[in-house]
Amino acid sequence: MPQGEQHVSYPYPAPGTVIMFTTVWCGYCRRLKHQLDGQGIVYDEVDIERRPEAADFVMSVNEGNYTVPTMLFPDGSTATNPSAAEVKARLHG
Image (tube, rainbow, N blue to C red; front, side, top):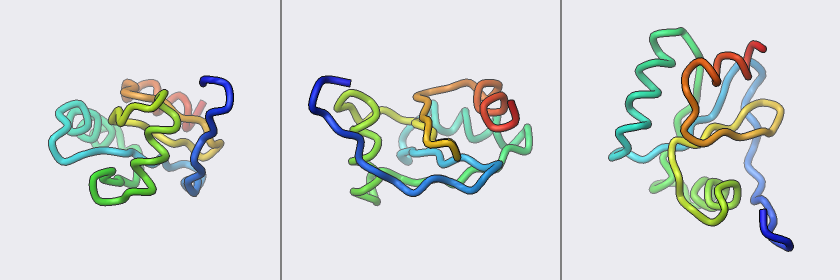
């Protein structure tokens, strides 16, 4: 992160769940949701085009870019366009 840039805060998800920041047109988001559903991984979906505070958070953790899917984990860490295996490992690791 560039010097002086700050992360925008966003409420962390409950233990064992993840927040997935998405848009309705994102093909990578649809694919990841399908994979997570198939593995029984619980997530809350947040559309960054409908939630300005979510868009600000995503931009703050992606070097100023609105990159989706971006995941927020219960420990406050994030991942951009992760695989379902990475999400599962970070949740249940």
